[in-house]
Image 1 (cartoon, rainbow, N blue to C red):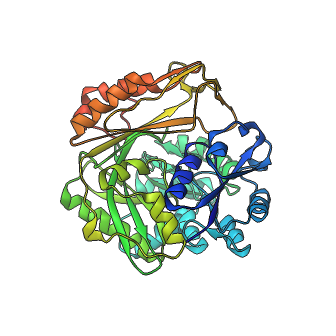
Image 2 (image 1 turned 30 degrees about the horizontal axis):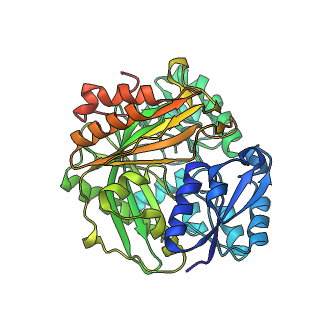
Image 3 (image 1 turned 90 degrees about the vertical axis):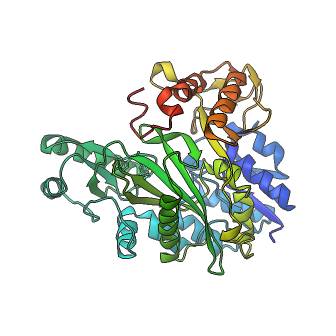
Length: 444
Ligand code: ADP
């Protein structure tokens, strides 16, 4: 087992990983940018190294700075968390090249899924249904039009190396396509240094259903059920739950098999998530695979009792999976609300600043993963996620009640947060009935 791990991240996920390390008896090294000097992840880690100024490109995204910190502190392994360098296969290669185990999949498995066009092609050849589309790069507008017409409008234009909803545009007709194509291309080029785009059918009011898998180096791959992440704003997840209110045991078996097949097709090891869209007629389509730990992993931990981060670290150290598929039992219901420092009454404008007063909810069934504390100053340089509230109970109805209690207790003064918005969503009768799809918030 590793003796010391460097966590190449910040915020709640850095703390989550430090906790897993402590439970495994592993020492930790935190890295931070100068604006994060008062962050909790530094206090919880055994050692810490400042890796640069606030700008992510010069700190949390700076591969030389992170590798130097790893050398300086003599760690065995590097955990990338999510975001930043987590899905950067070059970073994984550089870690390994410098003698640090990258806690994640092999760089070749990452590459197979990093380019979404290649990923879709390989999934199709493995017999997994993918969203109807062209599955190849589209160079120009005439070609784009031809493809869109053959698929049938509405279509969605996506960036081949996409993520975080960037470079994505829904298009309803030829005129709109002409206008939007160059914009999406430029956005993809700026965000991913590659303007390659592809087109797929835009499914109307689908649900986003994803499967958590864990695979080790010894050909064992298990699935831990699904998460329903249909409550989204601008294609970004806000609320996730497990199990999905719509997925039956037969449907679960089907997508779990697809997800395991997807992982095995690319010789995947580590934890990963295979994302699907479920259309109104009950068809699942592969969308992408996230080759890292995800924000919403705690809902799966709640219903399976499995510590996914600990498993991820153990597998990276060369240990076999400690759980067999037959030992995975889904019990109860869990819901997660992502609390952001944003103003829901002002078009979700970021609301950084000082937290004047704070009370974090607790009690039976509540878990809060957060890095904020009283008088903490939320910087404007990073993602606005400040806390995740996870409610767990025997039934969905009880989990919603438990979440309502926690959101009522949660007191954050000094900044605006999305707590009131979450309260609106979970008290909505349609949400309570489980009647959700990715357009839920538009119609709230
Ligand atoms: P990213 O990697 O940028 O987050 P994804 O491909 O994971 O993008 O898609 C994010 C969200 O966008 C999905 O959860 C879904 O709500 C929406 N979406 C993506 N593709 C489609 C599609 N073909 N039809 C309808 N909605 C889609």
